[in-house]
Length: 543
Ligand code: OOB
Image (tube, rainbow, N blue to C red; front, side, top):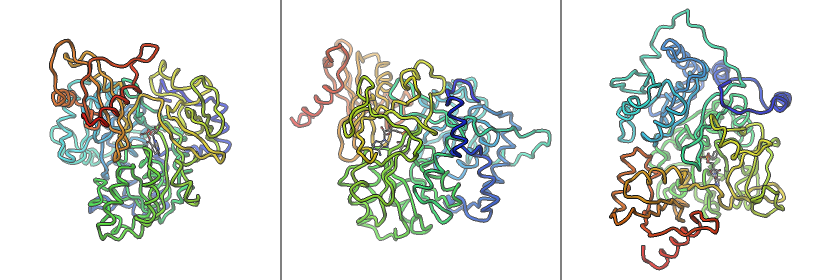
């Protein structure tokens, strides 16, 4: 077991195994088993290429054996930053097979995030595409490699430039002396990035056992089977399209994954029509774009049975339009990379589907809704959601001090979400207690951006808050107190953040210069009052 990863008490693990929630299978073995059972069926469609289960399994083995020969060992961390392309699967399954640990980065992450991920996980390798959406990841890799001494390898999907290509690794002849390591299902399979609310993002250790349970159970709820065709429109490294039930659930079911390079209707709609897509997942702003486009375009979307929407709050008004406009069922999904996933059920009454964010997927999920003193609130009242269960982590990787705050003494994860729950157990997300901005599903930890802003010599103080937005739900606004008499423009500050290598969605949408910050009665910056400042200035028409 990877060090510095809190885990379930032994008696709980025993129980989860006894109840057959954890089946003792690794993700690597799952693929091999699926290849035996569904060999000739198509597993992944990417652009013009179609790959069967048997081919995916073989390619994975070749890559795994190449990784081993290059010295990648069990428990070595490998930062994987691949967009929706075929190699994502061979890379992660090859790493699962040799017990190495993918650390999932998102395609939009830039130097600041990648360097931190590599350093904090002490990664030995970093896997990138050559270019994507006009961005050359090899330049980024070069910068990161000069800063992170532990990083021995950069592996590239496509044209490798000065690095090593994945194809050349898969083509290395296997040396008979290299034995395949034994991987246990109770081991950590990968590290996922948390949305975060602190200065530096936390890493989430998920085991083979717990993760496989989460997508097996998701498959049951979402009705996935061999005939399912899942369109991956969101970036597959994110927990929602990865496992709710996502691409891994689809492979488990023996279905077909269709990869969309981008989630736009121009890319996705023709794929739905051509491949007969039955289910896909979107964040709310994309669902709005799809509904807008569906009325204007002529593509045949009749194969689509289920549209999952999650990652951020979906408005009731928009939710009501999904079925009439897109001709498929809506399923709301409220989940978190730390574990717990809630779904509305496909046969729930319309009011439940459009008004709630679902209920926990497992009877084994425990939830508590508490006030600021951790006392449970009465049913129907708003409080913070705490949870624990067979697929919710017991602590972040290498984060002892933070874990003591983010988890209760008896192992409940503090989600930082303010919710209410009805008698039937359905959850409505009402807001947030954590210092985070949810920009249409992209999570921004306020403190992380504030620290970057504070590093500018002309910034005396900085506070990042959310502002309401009809399209994204929330956007970010940075309130800045300049240092002394210094003059500073919003454009200057934004480009400064870009030069620090911050992902574009974290660059504040608005920058507002002020002289002081309103304070709470304990002398802290009152973000609530700052948000109100924003609302008043907007209504006064002064912005
Ligand atoms: C998903 O995972 P993360 O880790 O990117 O973000 C989790 C947070 C939640 O704590 C909550 O604040 C917010 O995202 N959230 C929602 C929501 N779904 C997630 N807020 C309101 N309504 C929803 N439906 O975002 C994620 C992981 C697995 C499945 C789905 C989403």
